[in-house]
Length: 183
Image (cartoon, rainbow, N blue to C red; front, side):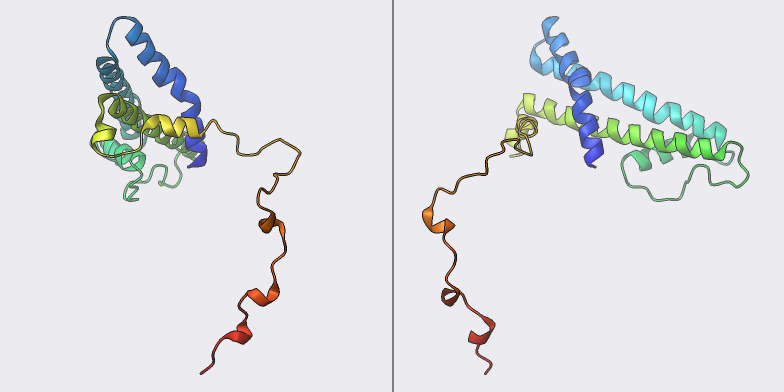
């Protein structure tokens, strides 16, 4: 999940923020711009990650129909994964190892795009005020949270502000196992 989140954060600007800004510069207000962008992104995701792969699966997998391919794509990319349809499960399939790697790449990219779609929907809900209505966290908070460095490169250790915190504890002030009543 960490890798997916990192990948989506990298593509968030060129695929979400830049197109919405471009739509706003062309004269659209922020609300219609986010709706138009989300609908365009949704159409691209459905075409590229559901319909096209379903057509490929229906051709490569002999026993699958086009609807079986759509079902597999939906179940896999929504992380339900029932396991009733498994690609490259037929023994003796030509280029089976390459096909399995291609399916893994498709699933990784598909999960990344689904997460991107959810983040875009969250940003759209933010612009329309739905996050406030439903008392959800705002999308900008998660972006600002990621800009803080995790590791501080400052070589000096943090200073203790309270003198009492730097003193060692008195062993007599702490409870011990000997003080537990056994009765």
